[in-house]
Length: 107
Image 1 (spheres, rainbow, N blue to C red):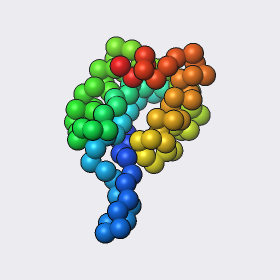
Image 2 (cartoon, rainbow, N blue to C red):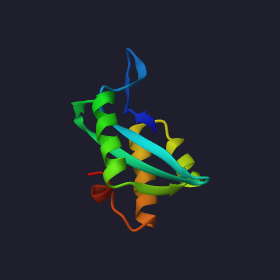
Image 3 (spheres, one colour):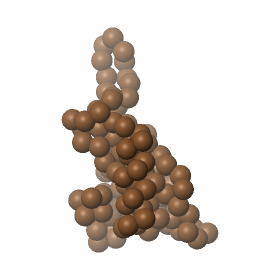
């Protein structure tokens, strides 16, 4: 099982661009076939401090309980994003194509 964390990017004049400590997304993934993966996703509320450990626990539980099956191409497409908002948009598009909604898949 592999995990990937996506953080929100913020900007300030003093710091420039940086990863914000509030909100974020964790993805747990397992390869189940040559070109097939299953994923579980945890989304941290943008008002809460992001915790990688808690994100891993929730994403792993969702992978086990209610996995989302994706192809290698779909997996690469959503994992190429570099921040939480871009990931969420890419994942939402993918889920809509599969007839799912983010609110049902990510809870």
